[in-house]
Every structure is written in C-alpha cells, then in structure tokens.
Image (cartoon, each protein chain N blue to C red):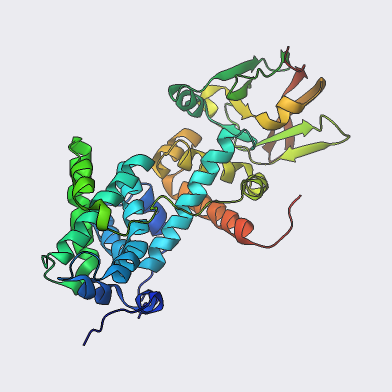
Length: 196
Length: 188
C-alpha cells in the first residue's frame, strides 16, 4: 500500500514505479515531492536521448521540457496504464516528440503555457562538466594515434568506418584504438595523479 | 528502493550507440534500457561529457594534434577561421598567429608512399633537446602531414625557430623524410 510522501528523503529512496503510482490521479501540487523526484531522475536521461537523436543542446533541452510536462500531465490524468513501466512510457513520448521536433512542429510553447506554472521543473541542462586544465593535460598524454582517433570521433563525429578509411585502418582497429584511448582518458581524468 | 543495474551495458556498446554505429534494433533496445536505468545513463552522460570536453579543449586551442586533410575540410565547413602554412619538404616558413584566428595549421609535404610507420621529432622551441612523437597517423595518399599546434601557447610565444623532422621507421632503421623549419614572429 502506498502512503503519501511526507519528505524529500522518502521520495529519494522510492522506485520510479512507486513515484509514478503516487502521482497517478493526484491533482496539481498534491504529489509535489514525487513529481520533483521523478523529474530529477528522468530529465537527465531524456536530455541524453535528445542529444543522441537530435545532436543539439537546445533541441535536447526543449525535448526535456516537452516530455516531462506531458509525462506528469498524463500521470495526473491517470492516462498511464502501467506505472511499473514508466521508463517505457517516457521512451514512447520521447520518440514521438523527437519526430515532432524534427518536423519542426513543436508544442513546447502551448504545453508550457498550460502546465509549466504548477510543475516542479528543475534545470535539465545541468550536465557533468570536466576540469578543462586536467582534460587538456590528459589528452596530451595519449598517444598521437589515440588523440587523432578521439578527435575525429568526437569533434568530426566520424564513425569507426570513416576514421579507418581516412587513416588506412580497419574499423575494428579504430574501435580498439578508440576504446584504449577512452579508457586512458577516463582513468586520467578521474584519477588523483598530479599532472604537469 | 532504487537499485543498481542488473544488466549493465558495456562502455563500447554505449559508445557505438552514441556514435550511431549500432543496428537500429540494437539502438532501440539501448534507448529502452537507458530510459529505465539511472546507472547506465550516468555512464553514458560521463562519455558524452568526455566527448564534449574534447571538443571544448580543441576549440580553446589547448591541444596539439596531427589530423587528416579531411579534418581540415571539416573545420573550414564549420566556418572556423583557419590560418594555414604549407611547408615544402626540407623547407621553412615564416609564421604567426592573428587574434582572429581560430585554428593555425601546418601542412608538411612529404613523400609518404610506402611508409608504414611515421615518427615526428620536434625540437623544443624554448629549451634544449627534442621530443619524439611515435606512430603519427597519416593519410599516405595526401602526400602531407597536417599539424595543429596549441594555439593558446602559440599566441603567447615570443619570436623563435622551431624544427620538425618526419621519419619513416623501417626494419633497417630510421629513414628521414624531411626537415621543416618554422620561423615564428608574434603578430603585428
């Protein structure tokens, strides 16, 4: 049996399905902690989905607003049949919203006008930021080949196949270099070792 | 209660997903997993932050890189202001960097046909000795090696000479391909 969430710590320890069930049928403002917590957890995932499929920060931020507003609204209106599968429900909305954003027919403004005032929207653009001094020093430590492959991968946004074609390597070879380079970079960035 | 992921996605798969290298069905299945999994989506967020960080430090002119001619075309297509120096084999060039430049690059012309491993030896512009960069990537068909120096360092540099040598590493030993001299002057 679900009880009303009285504190933020209750919400923080609840599963996403429990949070969805608490919002189900609740009027605006009556499941505020649960809504805020669900937003806190799902908004970064929706943002990543947006970045992956739309490749643009602003479009991803728009997607977060649209998807989260619609999700909460559908929960409040009892239109989510399986709260246990809230992730799948959100994915469905994401897919439709991305299609709409690609078509340029965004409903963002209309939705914001209708619902934004009573929803606990946090800033979804907050993403991990790296220490640039350390990152630059870590990139300098990579082998020339690793550095070039990572630059072509992330700056030029080339696939392993395209990087391989440009450097006379097989795609499999590029994936190995890429994997090794990323592993070195992650270790260096998150490691405590002092760098010159 | 929130819990850890029972079937974590491998980092390589996440990377291939991020780079759109997976088959559509596999990509859909990763989408589905990520929307329901805080742990794996946090791992992907870390990967995305690294990718963005690489772009940011490159843009800030803080890393030295050897790139392909196609990479330079990509920079030009992004409307970045490029300052290019073409240096003939065993030649030299007078060079500088202007305040409005986004990227400075040098194209070192070299006979790369038949080269399997290329090393780059560079004199230290402000100290004694030299550094050797091993196994530099190159596109043999282009007949050139493209260097992008650290713009942030170059902007602050006083007048100096800098020499670079390209070496083909072969079974019988090193075979120098060419020497290149940069005569740098501060802008203005």
